[in-house]
Length: 224
Image (spheres, rainbow, N blue to C red):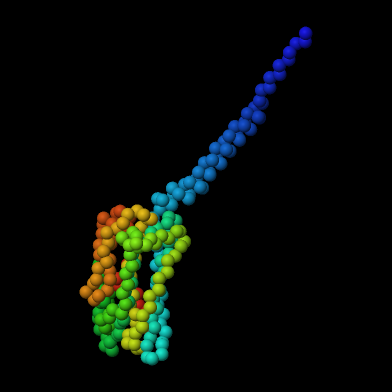
């Protein structure tokens, strides 16, 4: 009866290191996949601030029957990495006519700003148009979510008699936060001149909780 032969193979040092290298490569690939698909796409954006860019535009067109058509456009764009949710928007349009006299004047005194002008004195701004909208984050019925890079344009139109004003002054107030972070208690108020404005939106409590707002109370001016 013949003898049974058993052959035992032992991996060489080269094969051992090859197997170890393959394991390390698989671990690195798994870590890289986690970094790209989990961290970069979800964890990192969740820790970054929500950022909104607002751009204003105003144009006017003469109409028949001695009228002038004014169009105000505002575009809100998510320029950050996380998605965001709009809370509310206020836009106020005023007509301003300059007087024929010069003199020192300050339109609105704001803390930290020193302004002196000896040019033509502007008359009192006259409210021509006011608009307020609130979305889900401010207790409204509709949601207004913006993914990274997405924009949200709004357009407002009204007509005035020609040559009534020299410039149009635009004030706006826009607020946003992370999607479904909370419903913010920010009421819409009427100011003394009849225009809309958000009351208490930029309180320390709201800012600490994540509400972000951008407002232009000094106004931006456009010739008409």
